[in-house]
Length: 79
Image (cartoon, rainbow, N blue to C red; front, side, top):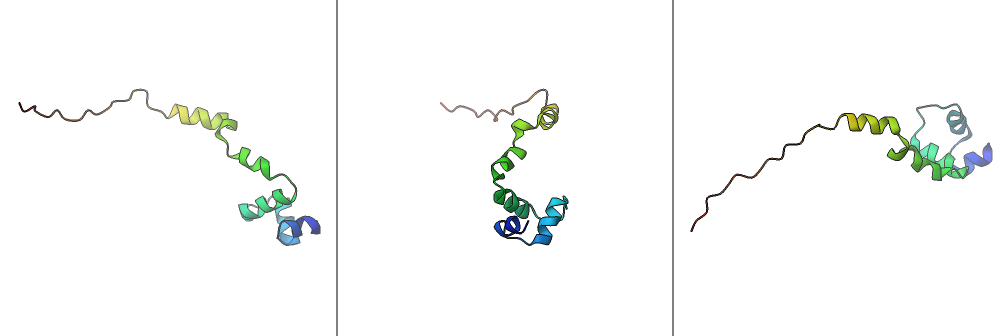
């Protein structure tokens, strides 16, 4: 535990809070711990919309059914 805490640039007590899932620990500390464990590459997948089928379905449900484009007003032709 001391080695992981040292590599994550945090204290052992903070590392214990991370292990307990304490939501008051900053995301930066979690990222440091993931880096120390060699698991940081997976962090990008957490927020990837491609991995969130429920979020995609909700976003699609909120899209308008019809789109009405506003046309610019016609200008009279001189000539």
